[in-house]
Amino acid sequence: MKMTELAAPGLAPSIRSRGRFTSQTSALLLMLPPALVLFTLFVALPLFDAAYYSLFKWDGYGTPTDFIGLDNFKQALGHAVFWQAVRNTLIVLAVSVFVQLPIALGLALLIYEKTPANTLFRLIFFLPFILAEVASGLIWSFVFDGNTGVAAALFHALGMEPVFILADRHWAFAAITLVVVWKYFGFHMMIYIAALQGVPKEMLEAARLEGAGRWAIVRHVQVPMIASAIGVSVFFSIVGSLQLFDVVIPLTNGGPSNSTHTIVTYLYTFGLTRTRIGFGSAVGVMLFVAAVAFAVLYQRQISKGSRS
Image (cartoon, rainbow, N blue to C red; front, side, top):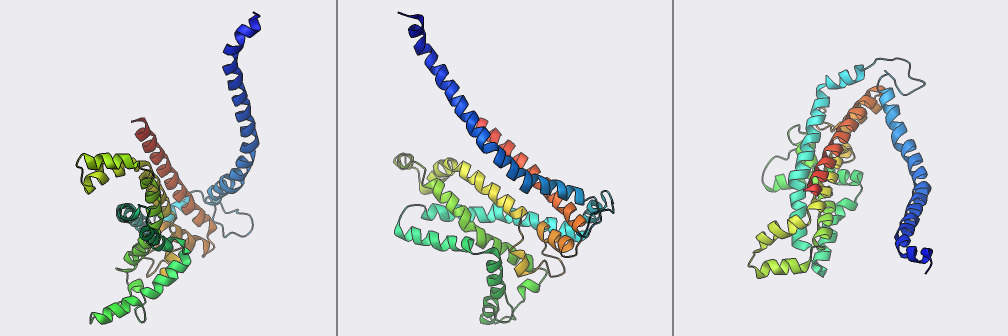
């Protein structure tokens, strides 16, 4: 028997491995350049531009020439409305994580099984997410209207003087958080439903045979099995809170007295609409740094969880 024939079985895996490596390298060389070009054009370059413009007093016209260093950052950090916007953003984040997500999970646990009635409820609960943010804001601005809205009718029915909720400093931001919960809980509910439908029925049946009750099954079987979906949901919830803009503008436009600004509406109002592009860029850079810090912490926690 020839030596080449003896060696052939041993060489086959290495040949297959080399073939896989070649195909992976080809795919990488084919797909990576377009992705890098798009990332550079639409992510990296705008970020570098924003960081550059944040160092100038610039109104957006012509070439920035009035270099002021970090003054835009100092102005933002010394502005009381900026800190109000930061506080409001953190409140939205907390409400999203600790109120919205438990509601979404509770509803998902009620209607995750595939029945016609559950399908109808899923559609109803998901409808607010389908609506455009601006349309949602306009709808709720009519609801909260102190003259002709649903809120006014409720106050009249209770024999009380109607309150103009969106014009009240104490109630306006609470109304915004209510709309945020209403708008996005359906999205998170659908994430949980998809994950719950993937939990093996054998595990649920085994837990029932062991005498576990409904709450014990939820706590010890279903929730641990969908932990990764909950992590994704929390990630989307926090990122969405940091970017909140479209719901606030049609409802209050940041008022009354700048009490309902989020970081993004603050950037828009005090940067873009007042043609202070350098100042707005500085706020954008700070928001970006906060988002990156969160993403890094999140990734570290996910990596730690997967190792354990």
